[in-house]
Amino acid sequence: MAETAENHEVSDVVPSTAETTAEVEAVLDAPVDRGEPILQVRNLVKHFPLTQGILFKKQIGAVKAVDGISFDLYKGETLGIVGESGCGKSTVAKLLMTLETATSGEVFYKGQDITRLSGRALKAVRRNIQMVFQDPYTSLNPRMTVGDIIGEPFDIHPEVAPKGDRRKRVQELLDVVGLNPEYINRYPHQFSGGQRQRIGIARGLALNPEVIICDEPVSALDVSVQAQVINLMGKLQDEFELSYVFIAHDLSIVRHISDRVGVMYLGKMAEIGTDSEIYDHPTHPYTQALLSAVPVPDPAAREGRDRIILTGDVPSPANPPSGCRFRTRCWKAQDKCAEEVPLLAVPEVFAGKKTLAAHESACHFAEERDVVHAA
Ligand SMILES: Nc1ncnc2c1ncn2[C@@H]1O[C@H](COP(=O)(O)OP(=O)(O)OP(=O)(O)O)[C@@H](O)[C@H]1O
Ligand code: SF4
Ligand SMILES: [Mg+2]
Image 1 (cartoon, rainbow, N blue to C red):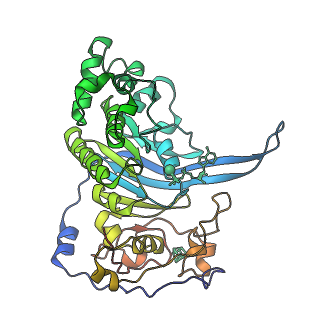
Image 2: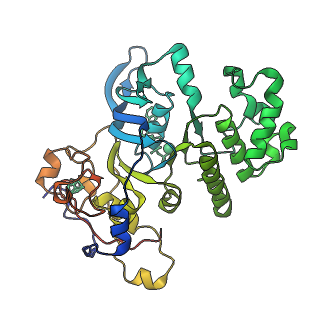
Image 3: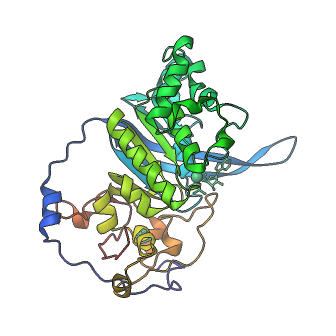
């Protein structure tokens, strides 16, 4: 056993029963044609150097914020990314937006590696990949009118809306996100939190992008307002064939909006699959623990469930554990987990099997468990 596994308090989690329901069969039999990916992320790495000294800075290490992540994003889909604070979600978002330079790895947009682009070529790609930020209170400049905020991207890309057309285009965008076009001259403080996030979404849509990276877009909003913004995003996705990367820590929200979900842990992808695969048939211990921690409102369901209580803090990304990064908190850790990095792949035990557990999971000892959850 790995050195830290024994002192973890783990309840007995019920082993999964065989999947024979018509529902599961139907999902498995349905042909999956996602078309060509619009974004392909390959072995993406971002290490932030740790330095010492004032005049002569010496690198003494690195924060391995993102450490070899791969996934695809398909046209018109929403890929949710979940994980604890500090696991590297926002860094992934910034790398996809080319706001950070990758240490290594590639991000292909329609087949072109955007991590090596500069100048005009980069500008053209950036137009197609936009972002909606977490905090609608701080991400909007309080001294600018809503019209100027939403229209600002047109300064960089005047070809999308020439000067004479801008006001009309901004008013159209306000209408699209459910705000009164007459509000164009108001300032951010004159809007509620939900309305401000609608302004952020309108700004994200201004350049007719194909991909929108949403970094915790509703986390700062009240629950009732969250639903309205999520519904708006779903409507806009259908209308404009948008692809979303939706980053959040609320598992229920992510399930609600996502077609597929990736679970991150300490700079790595632990598990990725469709929402049914991840939420109903998780095979990675970390995902199982996350799901078992989601509050269940139904007392009857709550009674029958076993919670996995993770102990210990997330290790520092500057000094991650060898082998599997989750091993210092994993109740199933064995010697192999400290020696070999588990690759993100369909585990051998499920390969070729007709089961929703047959999805990519970075665990040497992946197995299915029933987890009763609220989502
Ligand atoms: N510019 C930077 N310089 C040094 N370290 C950084 C920098 N940006 C992020 N980090 C570190 O990288 C790690 C990942 O950070 P990131 O913001 O991507 O996490 P996150 O998953 O988005 O967390 P949260 O859920 O709290 O938003 C953290 O340890 C963070 O401190
Ligand atoms: S490889 Fe699997 S069993 Fe081993 S520590 Fe990691 S998550 Fe746990
Ligand atoms: Mg973040």
